[in-house]
Length: 125
Length: 343
Image (tube, rainbow over all chains, first blue to last red; front, side, top):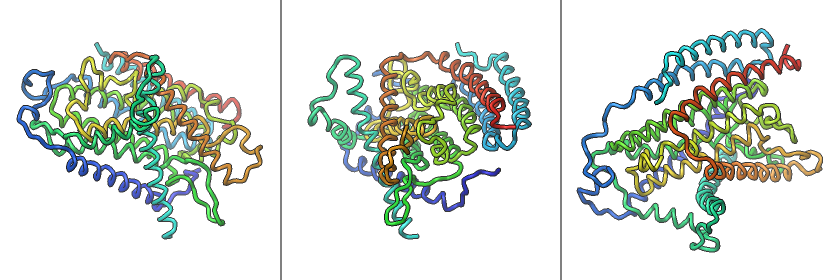
């Protein structure tokens, strides 16, 4: 069984309409607030906020490697999740064999998952 | 062809209008619900029962001065909230609001478009929403904003995995990614929640995390990060971030109702003997009743459960929900095998 709902490129055309409508709303609002609001320039006001004290240096600072690790792991795991979508759609036609094959895939998925946990990649302190 | 185009245009504008109005009145409802739970009155000055409060807030947002910090990256600073708002308005395109209306022999589907990859479309658009927060937080060039954006984006991507896995168990049962067909497979009271209770719990927890709602609102944790990723924002650009959150809440409630609570189906709908048009209207109303219940549920949780600590949040996402979601897939497969749904 292929995807059961038939789909042709023109089905996606209304999405384009919605995109331009949303973009139109956002663009108009941004321009209108820019024109309507008061503009009183002062050097102090345009400084970045730091709890009332003078801001120290720049915010382009190194941050915790944990966030980077989470992002990398997300890419890995999300790709594996996406692999499972076509399988899930065709699950009923693939039958028991499909189920067993996916269990094998999930087993490998779990091995990788246990490995990163044992490595301490998700340890937050 | 032209008639179809005009109809689609009207439908798109109607749905965008409804999302915006619901989001506006969600801000009012949130304050009224909070007031009710804390034994206060809530907004009651603008109009009868304070009903004009959202309008007053909107006008105020328009009239405020917009401040773009001199050290910020100016183009990205403006693009950030625009992405957040646009993506939140895009997701409503694939939601079936009710069954088809037929007037003079022509049928008018109450859904902008029924694509066969509806669920994948939703995931795609929701993932782009992360960029709005990340770009806005980084472009502000403020330490609080940067930390808030980092927290928000790594929280959102972490919970996206468990969310995807929760849906896979549902797709195994339905065999389709089209939201319209998923709703059609739940006639009357045979809702998916009866077959997928674990999947539903995982999904709703992830929906809270994706919307940055309490107890997962670490991105804008006032006591630590001032305002989180929108610390530097003012005027309508701040309004966009706050508004996008409420539109997202509306859309998540709609998706929860569609996937697990039968969408526009309700028990005994075919025993009433109503004409298809009446049934479509009534179904639409029932669908909105379900959505409003879930919006209320979001607010209820907000005033019930305190905020998590960041390590607790990450542990729940990766070490709690992800293995449970994997187990749920295996369990669904096994039960379907044992009950003879597959062979």
